Image (cartoon, rainbow, N blue to C red):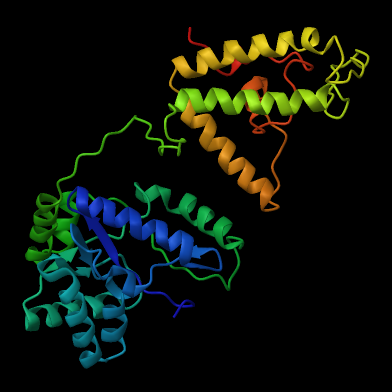
Length: 338
């Protein structure tokens, strides 16, 4: 039910699980949007659970809802489905954060787990770091839901206990179910993934066979500049710096065309040298691609802002619509090898 989705917590064990999770999340944003909320379809998990550990979601999961409704048989059927997908990587999640029905759900979950030899794990469904952050969190929730803090009708879905408890606090809270805490340590041991942070990874832009990305980038930039100059010198694409008169209109075939374009050609050469030497040609091609796609699909795109508008290459590739020569904008503010 898209109006009342259930929760499932997925944890990454290894690189395979990380890739599966990123695919699932991406698909939920691309294909599972409902009223602005990305949701995962249950059948998408088939074949995509390797390397992932699943937690039932507590009272907000499908198992928890069935148990709270008194539907033990339904809960057992749901549990069987999750075990088929995740095997020994599925845990019944237990919460004690002071929210309605949590304790009832906890005891029913423990009974179900014992009956089917499925592990349980304690979690605090953490939404903020410190207990004093609760009010700030409520403000954020209200902003997201378009409500005010004093609205008596707004749902109170969170409690001030959903902070990052210390190990000692969790031990005291779950003293009667020590295995739920032990299993949290076991899950941590099972999750081993190394992520490379601080590095940028760009997709490989498709390049015609026989060309390097630098060559293709330079060729597209020169073609784009040619198109721009035909318009600039025909008076169709002229931008005049404040306080200056029009540069005048000159036909592209007129004798002074070659002379007037020298400043553009020299600037393009300098920019191409810098961009290629810094390893950014693919970046420009990618940005040009999605900007053009947006324009072709009637999605509003601005003429350019910030230091990027100082690039003649960006102007030539139609990333921006501001002539940096006419407007005396500096490319060095955008990219500078020094």
